[in-house]
Length: 47
Image (tube, rainbow, N blue to C red; front, side, top):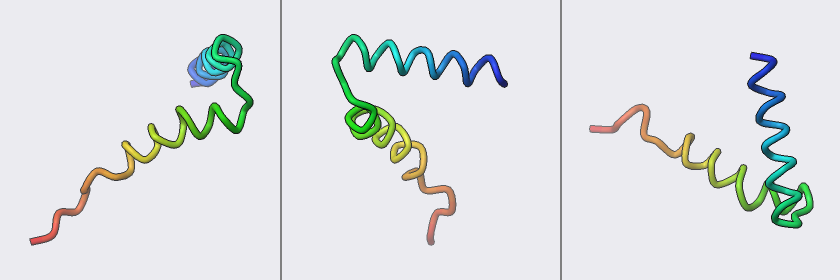
């Protein structure tokens, strides 16, 4: 699990560097949409 977190941190740093993003811009552009896509799924469907 630790290796996965380190890998994600490195990938995030590379993406930020290549796209000239600040940490806030990175979160707004990549992390927030991914989080919303994962949490917007209807886990408990209504009838």
